[in-house]
Amino acid sequence: MKGQKAIVTGGTRGIGKAIAMALAEQGIDVIITGLNEERANSAAAEIASKGSTCHALRADVSKAKDVEELFKFVTKHFERLDILINNAGITKDNLLLRVKEEDWDAVINTNMKGTYLCTQEAIKMMARQKYGRIVNLSSVVAYIGNPGQTIYSASKAGIIGFTRSVALEYAKRGITVNAIAPGFIKTDMTDRIPEKIKEQILSMIPMGTYGTGKDIAKTVLFLISPDSSYITGQVIHVNGGMFLG
Ligand code: NAD
Image 1 (tube, rainbow, N blue to C red):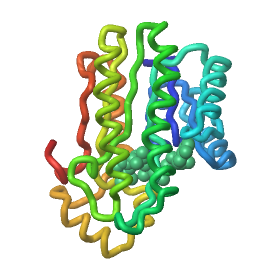
Image 2: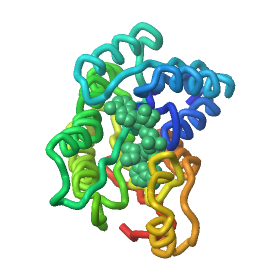
Image 3: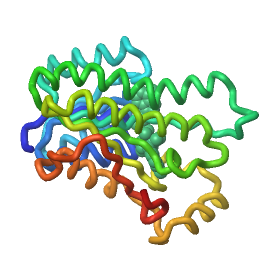
Image 4: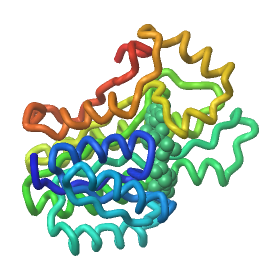
């Protein structure tokens, strides 16, 4: 896989950064995107220290204009694209009756519309090449639900339907499209959860530990490798036994 070209959206921290690091360790050149330019640049320097090229770009995946710029950046620096990891995601948690319309729009636009916009642009390049690997980040809550996460779980369930349909549209074109549904992974996103709720979540994990970004990164490495070339439209659950798909 050395020399392949990848985008990891939201690759500036957490799971996305762990994925970008793992790709770089394989000699894959990476573009990471995020909302904070300074953080993106410092993450890119760290990722590049693994020996491959890493560029950072501030791009909001929920904005078509930013995604267009991102793919111009890809053409300029890489000319081709082998791998797209749709990782950028946010939560705006609240009980249904307290959910505000702007929170609904923000989460759906980042998690779902962002995945659609990036995939649509990537597919144009991948279809020409007759090769591509797309991995979308869903979540265990798409399957089991979670009080207070109505918008987030809707967005992550939507990603699964999207993944399956794109996989079918491009199955004959050398492009595989799969999703990963992580359970509870320790990152900035989950650090915000109150300790009491974290303890409750831990009690729901049969393996008794939280997952790490590396657990997700290793699954991504499998899904982009030749070992998984006959796998498309699937969801891989990485959750310590929290939900059995
Ligand atoms: P995080 O909050 O630590 O990082 C999210 C990243 O996405 C950041 O780099 C941020 O800059 C970027 N981002 C947010 N909005 C963006 C936008 N509009 N445009 C571009 N980039 C944007 O989150 P994480 O825990 O590393 O989660 C990564 C992905 O995995 C998300 O899609 C999340 O929903 C999913 N996930 C996480 C967990 C978990 O337990 N941490 C579980 C299931 C699924």
